[in-house]
Image (cartoon, rainbow, N blue to C red; front, side):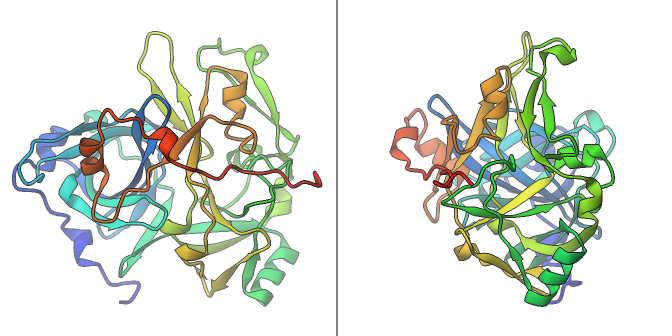
Length: 367
C-alpha cells in the first residue's frame, strides 16, 4: 500500500445498528476518525486515558489532548453493539471536543496495551474546529504520525551518517540520569522559536519553569519552581521530521485537577512531547523518513504518573518520575477483549495491587 492511498476505513468509519454517533453525541455535524486510548487503575478508581485523536478524510490531522474529563461508559447487553465510551477532551486552540467510540468499533489492540477504536467527535456546542498538531497516515495496520527531532548541525550530520538517533538516559526533567530505560525524544513542534516553545518540551533558557497549583490565586508568589534542562532555542535549530508508529510512543504523565466548586479533570503533562523508550544504550534506527523502531524493541514500564495538581509534590511528580509513587497502572487487557468489555466484567474490583510495574531507577553513579 502506498502512502497516498486511502485506507477503506478512513472514509467511512460506520455506525453500529442500535445507536449511532448522532445519538451519543447529540448532533449530526460530527467528524469521524480514530481514538487511541488505554485503561488505567489507581488505588481508588479506574479511568480511560485518551492518547491521540486521528481525524479521517482527505486531510489527515492528529490531535493530542491537553485536558480531558472523566469518561462515561454505558452498556446495554445483547450483542454489545450499543455499548459505548464517551468523554470530553480539550485540544489545540483550547477547543473542547466530545468523543465517542463503540465497543464494536475496535480496530487494533496495540503492543503498548493501548487500543485503537473507530470514533466520532465534534466541538462542544458546535464551536470552532480545534488546531491540529500535525498529520498522520495509515500503512496496513500501522498508524503513524509525523514528529520532529530537534538537534544542531553536528547532531544532524551524525544522525544522517549513522542512520540512527541516540537514545538519552536523562529523565523528562533533564537533570537526572536513569539506569533502566532511555528515551528518544520527539515533538510535534516543527520549530523552536521562543522561550514558550522551550517550555513545551521541558526545557528553558533560564534552567527553570514554574507551575501554579489548581486552587491557588493567579499570582506568581504561589507558583512552584522546577529546574529543567537549560537550553537556548538556537541550540536546537535543525528539525528532522520522521514518521513514528503510535505503538512505540510512551504514554504521557498526568495532573489531576480538583478545582473548588467545579468538576474534576485531568491535564496531560507536556502534550507536545513524544518519547520512545528503549533499553539503555540502544539507538533508534531510521530508514529514510521513517523511525524504524519495532514495538518489540521498546522498553515499557507499565504505568502513568498522576500528580495532584494542587500540591507542590503532585505538580513535580510527573517530572520527578523516578521518585514518585503516584501511579496509574496500565491494564494489560487480554487479547480478544477491549476497554468496555473489560470495564463491564471487572467493575467494582480492585485491580491496582495485582498489577506489577517497573519503576524508573536513578543511575547509581549519580551522573
